[in-house]
Length: 238
Image (cartoon, rainbow, N blue to C red):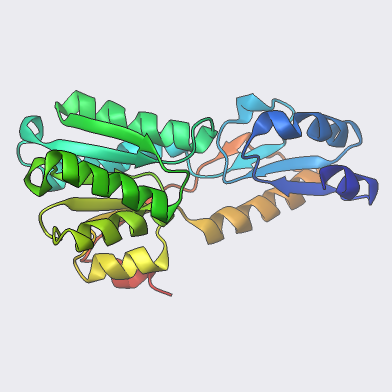
């Protein structure tokens, strides 16, 4: 697809490079032909030094912000808190960074991490892991489950509901899906951390236009993350 676009004469290429090694060659060729390459929803500009700019949430910092908010606001005794993490696909940079951000904050606070499992951002896989954890540790043996992306958050919620554990096991999301935001408002999910997808897309296009016009463009732009709680969830509903 990248090769076809370059052959057709695009000036700016916006791409979310999930697996960098699979697109590095075509991107190198695109840059050599004068195409401005803009990474969208991606923060690691060092992974491809020839990129014009990256526009996306810094997944590591966002995860640390979310985990820190979770610990400080919902766990008065972190050292006696037991948490499990459902993460996204192994090897995908954004999920590696999110998982690292979560675990560093939890470890620093003294939280016990029961398990970390890769559910490929799939709701059914996430639900299965939660069911297994509840069977292994019991409802009273898990204080919270952290999610690396909201498709998995919905699977976690389903499993916790089926175990009649709402209110006993805290859940947080990551991405700000509308269904998750609604569940936050209903008190089923503790809170969600949300990227700013509209702003990411808009700013990526504008920086592409700036680059075409020869204007200076910073190598990386982070639009930040929103913390969606029961107090402010209505602000994020479409």
